[in-house]
Length: 213
Figure 1: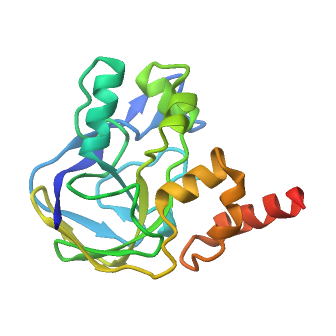
Figure 2 (figure 1 turned 90 degrees about the vertical axis):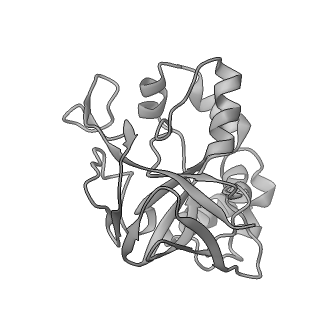
Protein backbone atom coordinates (compact mmCIF):
# COMPACT_ATOMS: atom_id res chain seq x y z
CA UNK A 1 0.00 0.00 0.00
CA UNK A 2 1.29 3.43 -0.94
CA UNK A 3 0.97 5.95 1.88
CA UNK A 4 0.60 9.67 1.59
CA UNK A 5 1.56 12.96 3.17
CA UNK A 6 -1.02 14.13 5.67
CA UNK A 7 0.69 17.51 5.96
CA UNK A 8 3.88 19.47 5.34
CA UNK A 9 4.93 21.51 8.37
CA UNK A 10 7.13 24.61 8.75
CA UNK A 11 8.48 26.10 11.98
CA UNK A 12 7.01 28.98 13.88
CA UNK A 13 10.03 30.40 15.70
CA UNK A 14 9.60 30.02 19.46
CA UNK A 15 11.53 31.90 22.11
CA UNK A 16 11.53 29.95 25.37
CA UNK A 17 13.82 29.02 28.25
CA UNK A 18 13.78 25.39 27.14
CA UNK A 19 14.95 26.18 23.59
CA UNK A 20 18.19 24.35 22.81
CA UNK A 21 19.75 27.18 20.81
CA UNK A 22 22.02 29.52 22.75
CA UNK A 23 19.85 32.43 21.58
CA UNK A 24 16.80 30.87 23.21
CA UNK A 25 15.05 30.27 19.88
CA UNK A 26 13.67 26.97 18.63
CA UNK A 27 12.06 25.68 15.46
CA UNK A 28 10.39 22.65 17.06
CA UNK A 29 6.92 24.22 16.83
CA UNK A 30 5.97 23.36 13.26
CA UNK A 31 2.60 24.09 11.65
CA UNK A 32 0.92 22.73 8.51
CA UNK A 33 1.19 24.91 5.41
CA UNK A 34 -0.82 24.99 2.21
CA UNK A 35 0.55 24.36 -1.24
CA UNK A 36 3.88 22.97 -2.35
CA UNK A 37 7.10 23.21 -0.31
CA UNK A 38 10.60 22.75 -1.70
CA UNK A 39 12.75 20.06 -0.09
CA UNK A 40 16.42 20.91 -0.57
CA UNK A 41 19.56 18.89 0.15
CA UNK A 42 20.22 21.11 3.17
CA UNK A 43 16.65 21.16 4.50
CA UNK A 44 13.11 22.39 4.00
CA UNK A 45 12.63 25.77 2.34
CA UNK A 46 11.20 28.29 4.80
CA UNK A 47 11.89 26.16 7.88
CA UNK A 48 13.88 27.31 10.93
CA UNK A 49 16.44 25.24 12.84
CA UNK A 50 17.71 26.68 16.10
CA UNK A 51 20.32 24.23 17.38
CA UNK A 52 22.30 23.33 14.27
CA UNK A 53 24.92 21.43 16.28
CA UNK A 54 22.40 18.58 16.65
CA UNK A 55 19.75 19.26 14.02
CA UNK A 56 19.72 19.79 10.29
CA UNK A 57 22.44 19.00 7.74
CA UNK A 58 22.26 16.64 4.75
CA UNK A 59 21.69 13.50 6.85
CA UNK A 60 18.86 15.18 8.79
CA UNK A 61 17.44 17.42 6.08
CA UNK A 62 13.82 16.35 6.67
CA UNK A 63 12.13 14.84 9.72
CA UNK A 64 9.06 12.64 9.27
CA UNK A 65 6.57 11.29 11.82
CA UNK A 66 3.60 8.98 11.31
CA UNK A 67 0.07 10.22 11.96
CA UNK A 68 -0.76 6.83 13.46
CA UNK A 69 2.04 7.12 16.05
CA UNK A 70 0.92 10.65 16.89
CA UNK A 71 -2.61 9.32 17.49
CA UNK A 72 -1.23 6.77 19.96
CA UNK A 73 0.49 9.55 21.87
CA UNK A 74 -2.67 11.66 21.88
CA UNK A 75 -4.49 8.80 23.60
CA UNK A 76 -1.59 8.14 25.97
CA UNK A 77 -1.35 11.72 27.26
CA UNK A 78 -5.01 12.65 26.90
CA UNK A 79 -4.69 15.64 24.60
CA UNK A 80 -4.81 16.30 20.90
CA UNK A 81 -1.57 16.59 18.95
CA UNK A 82 -1.79 18.54 15.72
CA UNK A 83 0.40 17.76 12.69
CA UNK A 84 3.88 19.10 13.33
CA UNK A 85 3.50 18.55 17.07
CA UNK A 86 6.59 16.32 17.13
CA UNK A 87 8.64 18.92 15.31
CA UNK A 88 8.27 16.95 12.09
CA UNK A 89 8.41 18.48 8.63
CA UNK A 90 6.34 15.70 7.09
CA UNK A 91 3.40 13.98 8.73
CA UNK A 92 2.56 10.72 6.94
CA UNK A 93 -0.42 8.41 6.79
CA UNK A 94 -0.21 4.64 6.04
CA UNK A 95 3.60 4.72 5.97
CA UNK A 96 5.53 2.38 8.30
CA UNK A 97 8.07 4.93 9.47
CA UNK A 98 9.44 2.84 12.36
CA UNK A 99 9.77 -0.17 10.05
CA UNK A 100 11.47 1.81 7.27
CA UNK A 101 14.84 0.34 6.28
CA UNK A 102 17.96 2.50 6.53
CA UNK A 103 18.75 3.61 2.98
CA UNK A 104 15.18 3.06 1.78
CA UNK A 105 14.18 5.57 -0.91
CA UNK A 106 10.83 7.34 -1.12
CA UNK A 107 9.39 9.16 -4.11
CA UNK A 108 7.25 12.02 -2.80
CA UNK A 109 5.98 14.74 -5.11
CA UNK A 110 8.92 15.61 -7.35
CA UNK A 111 11.47 14.81 -4.61
CA UNK A 112 13.43 11.63 -3.93
CA UNK A 113 14.16 11.01 -0.25
CA UNK A 114 16.28 8.47 1.61
CA UNK A 115 15.78 7.16 5.16
CA UNK A 116 18.89 7.77 7.29
CA UNK A 117 18.39 7.51 11.08
CA UNK A 118 15.89 7.83 13.93
CA UNK A 119 15.28 10.98 15.91
CA UNK A 120 16.80 11.15 19.41
CA UNK A 121 14.53 12.86 21.97
CA UNK A 122 15.98 15.93 23.65
CA UNK A 123 15.23 18.40 26.43
CA UNK A 124 13.89 20.91 23.89
CA UNK A 125 11.23 18.36 22.88
CA UNK A 126 10.31 17.72 26.53
CA UNK A 127 10.14 21.47 27.20
CA UNK A 128 7.94 22.07 24.16
CA UNK A 129 5.45 19.48 25.39
CA UNK A 130 5.77 20.56 29.02
CA UNK A 131 6.49 16.95 30.07
CA UNK A 132 9.68 16.49 32.13
CA UNK A 133 9.50 12.70 31.73
CA UNK A 134 8.93 12.78 27.97
CA UNK A 135 12.43 11.57 27.04
CA UNK A 136 11.99 8.43 29.14
CA UNK A 137 8.49 7.78 27.80
CA UNK A 138 9.41 8.53 24.19
CA UNK A 139 12.38 6.17 24.45
CA UNK A 140 10.27 3.38 25.94
CA UNK A 141 7.66 3.72 23.19
CA UNK A 142 10.39 3.49 20.52
CA UNK A 143 8.48 5.06 17.63
CA UNK A 144 10.97 7.87 17.03
CA UNK A 145 10.18 9.00 13.52
CA UNK A 146 12.88 9.17 10.86
CA UNK A 147 15.31 11.63 9.35
CA UNK A 148 15.63 11.74 5.58
CA UNK A 149 18.26 12.78 3.06
CA UNK A 150 17.12 14.62 -0.05
CA UNK A 151 18.61 12.72 -2.99
CA UNK A 152 16.67 14.76 -5.54
CA UNK A 153 15.37 18.17 -4.63
CA UNK A 154 11.71 18.73 -5.36
CA UNK A 155 8.39 20.06 -4.17
CA UNK A 156 5.94 18.18 -1.95
CA UNK A 157 2.50 18.95 -0.58
CA UNK A 158 -0.25 17.48 1.57
CA UNK A 159 -1.94 14.56 -0.17
CA UNK A 160 1.11 13.52 -2.20
CA UNK A 161 1.66 9.74 -2.37
CA UNK A 162 4.68 8.31 -0.56
CA UNK A 163 6.03 5.48 -2.71
CA UNK A 164 8.88 3.22 -1.60
CA UNK A 165 10.98 2.86 -4.76
CA UNK A 166 14.03 1.08 -3.32
CA UNK A 167 14.56 -0.96 -0.15
CA UNK A 168 18.02 -2.34 0.80
CA UNK A 169 18.25 -6.07 1.48
CA UNK A 170 20.05 -5.71 4.84
CA UNK A 171 16.72 -4.94 6.53
CA UNK A 172 18.05 -2.76 9.37
CA UNK A 173 15.13 -0.53 10.33
CA UNK A 174 14.65 2.83 12.01
CA UNK A 175 13.16 1.01 15.00
CA UNK A 176 16.15 -1.33 15.31
CA UNK A 177 18.64 1.54 15.20
CA UNK A 178 16.73 3.44 17.87
CA UNK A 179 16.44 0.42 20.17
CA UNK A 180 20.10 -0.51 19.68
CA UNK A 181 21.26 2.97 20.67
CA UNK A 182 18.89 3.35 23.62
CA UNK A 183 17.35 0.12 24.90
CA UNK A 184 18.93 -3.01 23.40
CA UNK A 185 22.72 -2.67 22.96
CA UNK A 186 22.91 -6.31 21.91
CA UNK A 187 21.56 -5.08 18.53
CA UNK A 188 24.52 -2.77 17.93
CA UNK A 189 26.59 -5.11 15.70
CA UNK A 190 23.71 -5.40 13.26
CA UNK A 191 23.68 -1.65 12.61
CA UNK A 192 27.02 -1.84 10.80
CA UNK A 193 25.26 -3.87 8.09
CA UNK A 194 23.53 -0.64 6.99
CA UNK A 195 25.98 1.31 4.77
CA UNK A 196 23.62 4.27 4.41
CA UNK A 197 23.54 4.91 8.16
CA UNK A 198 25.25 8.31 8.66
CA UNK A 199 28.96 8.03 9.41
CA UNK A 200 28.54 9.89 12.71
CA UNK A 201 26.09 7.21 13.87
CA UNK A 202 28.29 4.38 12.60
CA UNK A 203 31.21 5.84 14.55
CA UNK A 204 29.06 5.99 17.69
CA UNK A 205 28.20 2.32 17.19
CA UNK A 206 31.87 1.40 16.77
CA UNK A 207 32.81 3.26 19.96
CA UNK A 208 30.10 1.51 21.95
CA UNK A 209 31.08 -1.90 20.60
CA UNK A 210 34.71 -1.24 21.48
CA UNK A 211 33.72 -0.25 25.01
CA UNK A 212 31.60 -3.39 25.40
CA UNK A 213 34.47 -5.63 24.28
